[in-house]
Image 1 (cartoon, one colour):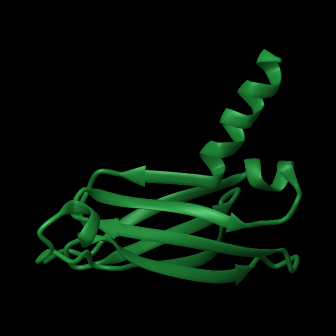
Image 2 (cartoon, helix red, strand yellow; image 1 turned 135 degrees about the horizontal axis):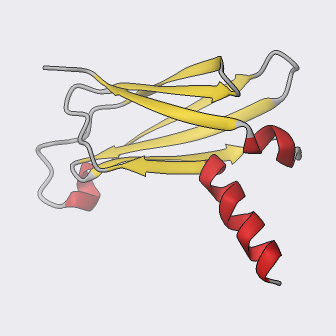
Length: 109
């Protein structure tokens, strides 16, 4: 059972992520399979005038395909506490998913 749990934890690292940096001016999430860039998703600016952290969340949903025709949907949430992303729809191919990685670029002032 421990090996299955470890495999699920490792896979989840390729399906979601977060950073504590605030994207006041938005930014971009670069999505790679191996070292090949397959998509650039927009990171929205959070609602900085919100009274509560939960009210500061702004969402962006992006659909994209890789060059093999595999379809993906990613949700990106930007708030005054940071940025989170979740791959909501993806192919049933663990090997492919384990080769995915993400880079965040936050726009400067």
